Length: 351
Ligand code: SF4
Image 1 (cartoon, rainbow, N blue to C red):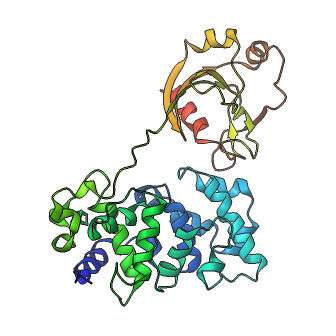
Image 2: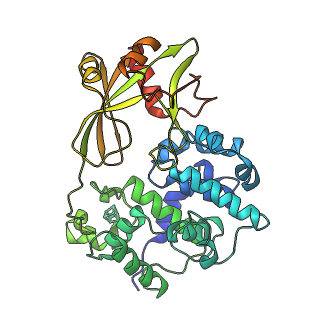
Image 3: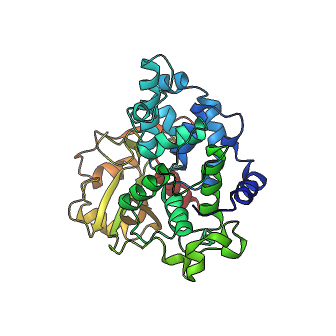
């Protein structure tokens, strides 16, 4: 096996990134929360949320006993709320079994919402045992360092894991926790998907991708085009004192359990979308004159048109039909599980 300058990598990571809050006062609970938060969300966003979340729900027990709405209020800003629900289900599962996290990789994978990656992270980072947590960052870094010219995705991850298990990919080290975290830091800071700062990288001298002259050619990019749909919505603000009219999303919908403003589809390139009712011709005409802002969710690029109406105007526009699902809720994100779109809409109105 090649001799890699691991010591330099670990020292760089320890010097530069030991301050991350989930790397202090470690517990398996903190590792699980941080790993779930860090999936699909940047470190800088998680930095602003992790400590407050752990203060509010410091143990599996507290998290298991909290309501979905309470957890989602603390989760606000991290997006992908399914992760918050999974975290609660994981806490409930653990508490039903006496409050102990299982020991083996196979048992860890039985926890709801815990897949191969999170189970490996709990082994390596939570318990400092021999394991490698291959997410998109580690997949990229390891493919580049070892020069594995394979398409991104599960096949490459299986290949890297197999090499790791056979002892071909990484050396025996004193701390697999430190190694995993250093590789994560490297993927985040120097070895990025579209940019590699190889001149600063501690592994430059042994990196196959760097030595090939085309570091970004590893791993092979996925050539499937990602479909993005256009979606134009009208979001209606009806105020009564400190309250606004809203409705709660059902478990099958986006942002399940959260409260959204009355929202209607003006137009979309996705004919299968059923998240909101279609706007009437009257509403379409009225909405065109409103304030606009852009957002995105999953595969949709959204243009949001904002319309402020009195309650009688709202009822008239809907023709009295389908208004039963709406109720007045406090306009306070600390007390009500308001969707981010509600806050963005109210902010747009203030401009
Ligand atoms: S040398 Fe460049 S390509 Fe190789 S691991 Fe470092 S940053 Fe990534």
